[in-house]
Image (cartoon, rainbow, N blue to C red; front, side):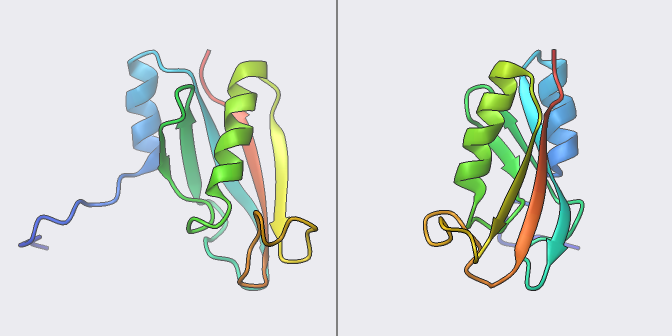
Length: 113
């Protein structure tokens, strides 16, 4: 399909991760592994984050990405994976949660050496 007004096409975060890996970047991959109720992104959605905090993709449509990126940076530094859960019932729901009323679980792992 033509793109007459040159809107950037969304990048596949896994392809971006492959490109970043070839250039030697340290990075982590966040993957939505479970959803319940109204969730902004489906299971299998990805967000790749490099050690400088650059990222590509989405795991929540923007409502918890900041927290996921922060956790991903720690995963890159330590090498220890994390399982994150977000939902409206969390005590931090309005700070970093899903105002849509759903819940998501996100697995964050280091994917570079």
